[in-house]
Image (cartoon, rainbow, N blue to C red; front, top):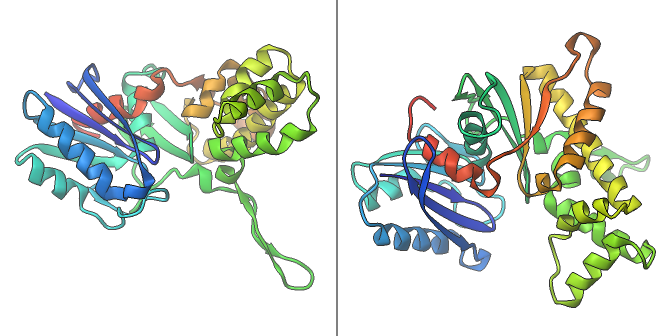
Length: 318
């Protein structure tokens, strides 16, 4: 039996299975940011103690930059207490003699989609995850591409507008892809737009009903149903998200020229309208000799992408 672990900013998932990616058992918990890394480690230890047998190998997808060669965490941008933590060493204390591999979660999801997901038929795959942050991973011939420590493929940190100064010397903030089309960024855009929308807007009605029930956040989940209801603002937002993503992915195309690009993460659940917006806009940003651009696909594994990929880490090579 092998163990796959996903450690994110909002959720913790552990699954048991084999290196083929088939899940046997699944455990899912919400992350409490107030308890930090200590709280997450306590949950992991508790679940491991409940397992019917000891895992022989462990794959981890961590939400932040890591040293994949040693299993040490560089940092988490969302949860305190992870900086410079030896996660592989800690897991080895819980499970002596287990083989342990720790990777960035976007890398792990990329591996999952390339080996067991939507991109199994392609040799060069770039995966972009659109969640609370925006990350990426590159898989070549079913093997992860690694840059210099502590990471690579951080597409979310590409500048759309670089920082600058005003005429009088005041600093002007720039804007990255992550600050524009992450789940949290889109949620905020929708909240800002709601007061301006007509009362019969499908998007406005859905968001106000959720807010009326005390649910604030994750407003982006209403974009797809509002789009299906022919809401023009939902269509506009999806096209804007697609255009920003296409611009970022044009840089990926010019640098790596993958065969396929996979859209994953929570925002990708917008589905075909988002994929179509990226596919239609991407050629505008890609140079003539690279036409047609890579195939654009929607992730197949959904919320299991990281855990399936984490199980796949127990295979070699990664």
